[in-house]
Amino acid sequence: MTYEKIKNWYKENKEKIVLGLCFVLVFFVGYGTGSFSRENQNIKPKLQNNYNTILKEKPAADPPATKSKEEVLGKTIPAKADEKCQIKGNVSSKGKRTYHIPGGAFYSLVKPEQCFNTEEEAVKAGFVKSSK
Figure 1 (cartoon, rainbow, N blue to C red):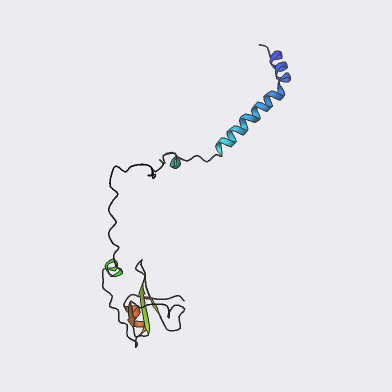
Figure 2: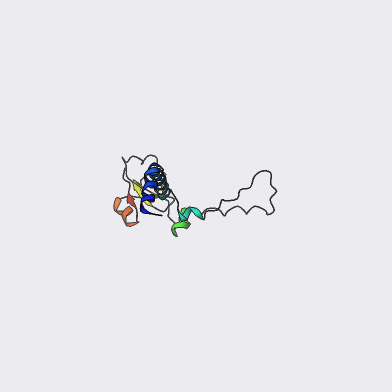
């Protein structure tokens, strides 16, 4: 092939060549921006029992009863429900110890798990003042 033949062929097919190059460019840009992730590649669907299948194994036993707050914290918290008691101490399910003072937003709603006469007593016992 001579240079002249290639030049003439290019002039005759210029629009087709440009269109083909644009197609290839759009394909690679679109493919590159796609959401492909190795993490998603290995995920296997979880098998689910439907109501029409017969279970070959007995279902697992019920989970053991949840532990009380005292068992989770490793300590017993004496609950003094005196009427003289002004500061109410409460322990959340996650173990956060909070005390409530009279006039606080939740003071009337809280059922005390531990009572204190002063805020200093509550702080020494590891309790933090309620934010509200």
